Image 1 (cartoon, rainbow, N blue to C red):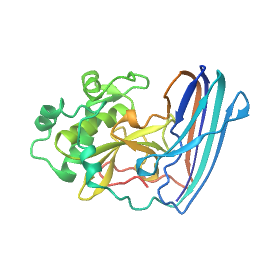
Image 2 (cartoon, rainbow, N blue to C red):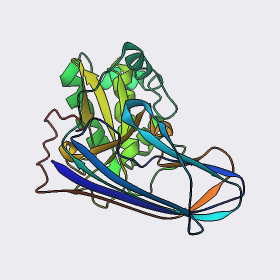
Image 3 (cartoon, rainbow, N blue to C red):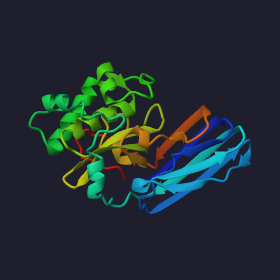
Image 4 (cartoon, helix red, strand yellow):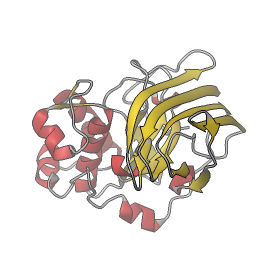
Length: 267
């Protein structure tokens, strides 16, 4: 399997701004990962640091003293599928706790009422189906501060909202669950995408209640408790204004068929 992905960002920074970009394909033991990064501030190359993240993720970090117009052009050609991931007990504990956007403690009564007696793979299937039925995908419908509870009340959201609700319902029943930011060939409209992952029977399985792209061809960017860990652009001092974003993800060959009932892991 060969996939080609790219992203382009254009933004204006204030003085004394430190930026973190989270757009690189996670280094997961592929047969080949060929990538290029062009980062410019007012047309001049920017020195950046590549920082490792959990689960193979990589951050591009840099600081600018003066206001500038910054552009990033990232492209990667990935051949093969990801290697087997090692998951530790401490990670499983981390991913079963409530988090900023996944208020599993508040949704515990809902999860037990909607999925009585269900465990394991049956619970995964039921949660995916329930979230898909209860929520309506509406582009731009959620705020950056909305968590799973707000999403459930509004009954609508974007991909990250679908993922946050699924994660919360699973954690409420003691299933470790996490969010993955991905490139998703076949996604329309094309953008960065977010899906849930759940740990069942010693493996992480992907849940995408939006059904907007085949899971088997997705490429991981980053992984975390929720969207607070996986933002594609953030500042750690100063400020910026995002002016433009474009994302592309293409599979060499036909896209795989997407069967929601099939057990799939991000490769």
